[in-house]
Image 1 (spheres, rainbow, N blue to C red):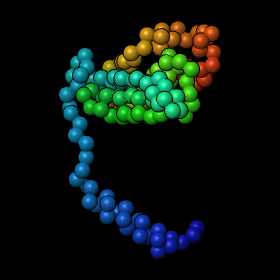
Image 2 (cartoon, rainbow, N blue to C red):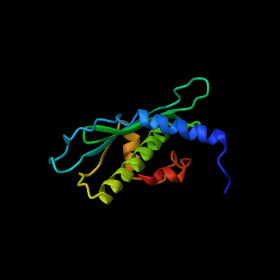
Image 3 (tube, rainbow, N blue to C red):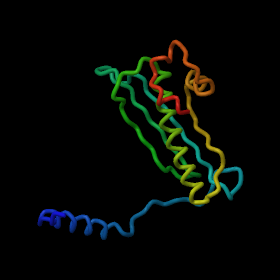
Image 4 (cartoon, rainbow, N blue to C red):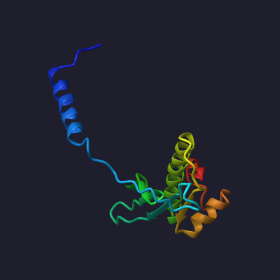
Length: 151
């Protein structure tokens, strides 16, 4: 193994000083649960997309928020790297990302033996909801990547 240089030690010292300075910082988590009973955590998500929001490059923006009880756990908003052909495709991609994240959170809760209620994911696009309920390849969705049919 190579030895750490002086620059590496300076970086390590800065990281340790930073961690020492924020030792008392944290996120407030509420114990109140928005579930069927107070003994289960309720996992729910909201996902949305803005189709062709940028008039210059025609790329869409995806976003989602995921709650564990009343606590916002992860959230994101990101611009797509490709141009989508329809609003349904963009909304479905947002729904897929939210579903995979919620599934991971539920598997983590199950591994930690934390009781949780069934998940609910909210989406405001009727075509996306119909596609999620019946993921048959239609003529309008044949160009959609297969990894998005995770839902």
